[in-house]
Image (cartoon, rainbow, N blue to C red; front, side, top):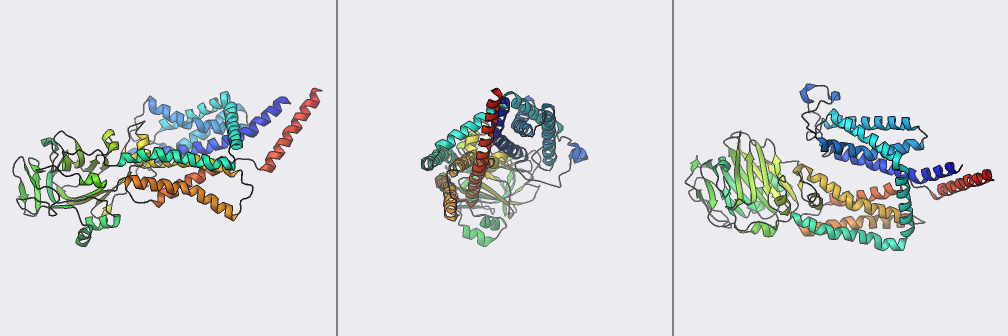
Length: 530
């Protein structure tokens, strides 16, 4: 009977945490395996096989990748094992069902990954994920009860400590700490480390190596020291002259066959041929033959760095696509350091600009596949607002997102980032900040004895306020526009955290009944011992 009481107490305190871990595990698995959530139903399975066969498209995975795949499913197997144990299943049934559930979930994910262009599916992931679920089961058998009991005890102690009065300083202190951490992280997106002795080069970089020279025609190069609104940028690249005039560019180089290449606005230096005079095609565009290019005779003033934002527009026509690695426009110095580089790599458009993050991350550049075609003109505009980079080509905005948030700065401390991952780091950052904050709100809200309309409105306002304050802080540091989406995302994580921590919490009536039942079991145990 004592064993029955002990088991009852363990299951009663652990059941809530097993369900929470299971929900968190599934959410983490879906995010890490299906991000960036861009699906293409027109994608053909590799080798034209049936998509249900999960034929790999060339995935190469080593021991470390296998370890990560196993580790990803360990929490899932752990929590599912506890859930099945509560239903009275035997150890063999629990192991079998846990492995089957892990295999089924992994297979479904691998099937969906076929239709995500940036993902690759394969059976090896199904096997390693299933092994991870099995590891989770054995971890539960070895230490599951003590882990869940410890989690429940920590929650109970913190709940007793968190009175409404204490919550009034615990929650603000928590978010204030994150605000202090976020400020220097967001500052990493600023153009604070630009090289001063840099020159503007059209058709190469300042080093002047022939293998970096670009071949083709350029008719226009423009600069702004601000980010252009999306609608205006679309109109400009669609060649609407009224939109271009309304944008008031800082500098405009119009190449129309003149021997003098001056900025029509007189803000930037005149360009001259390097190393010899080039050719002008049809008197309407600058023809770069790969042997000479244009370079400013003096250093470019750091107007862009001071503004912490910029837009650059280039109208060009490539003369070659295959095996091309030419710099179309760059702001760089002779030591090989660049502040900004717009180049062509085969048919791809590659853009890189200097900031503390990109200077430390070799892979942090924007790559747009198939942006160029042989002898086809392109009107390209790149705009950066201090945090977000946007690209427009021929009147269309590219859907890719390049955003430098505190999440990217946080991620670069532990790994080399890729541009395609930046959006995901934003989600992870807001989850780290606001989901635990929601947990604090959820625990503090348990102290409320009455939750009417007035109390609900006050609670919602208090939960949303940190989102607004953080957004205002990040806007102040980066200079970008205020984002309602970021506020909504933050508030969503707060609400999710509050719901998650209270999802399996017993009501006072249920807790009383459970206490009475434990007392009854304890009394019966003492009676039998007599």
